[in-house]
Amino acid sequence: MSRLIGYARVSTQDQNLSLQIDALKEHGVLEENIYQDKISGSKKERPGLQPCLKSLVQGDTLVVWKLDRLGRSLQDLIQIVQDLKKRGVGFKSITESIDTTSPGGNLIFHIFGALAQFGREITVERTLAGLKSARAKGRLGGRPKITANNSSVKSVKQMHESGCEPIQIAEVLGVSKRTVYRRLAC
Image (cartoon, rainbow, N blue to C red; front, side):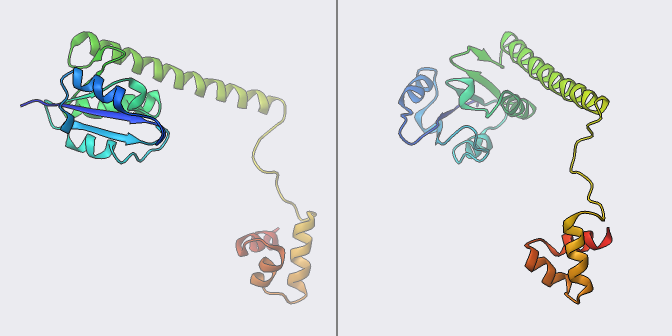
């Protein structure tokens, strides 16, 4: 027996879920099957979403009022819907008229996924091009190398030569013991 399971979310405690809940009910979701969150979508752990996703079984359909209510980003949304599909669970977004239980809705969702993948690849391509350009201009990136002439290396070595233990040096200089050992190795 397939069920419609709803998920509604607003970002703050001051906001009201009634618009979303009413829309979910109008689309056949029973009130007892609506999970809710009043938390920012940027939060990975959403207390209403986790039990909602766990409650879904093969043949069920997850219904949301709008796509941005479910995922933290397009990539996150696509991952959630792909996980649902693997479990035999459908997905519907009321506002965007997306229904992965229909061939047309499934196509639209795959187009979104392809666009998201394209965006990620463009970002990687631009990052690599920027790094290549910087290297061509002599900029290597990363932290500058510390040499024996560095003032912190000289301080550590002087303190060590005067009999201070590495742990004492670390406390005086406000650095870790590991940093002291690295400075001594220069």
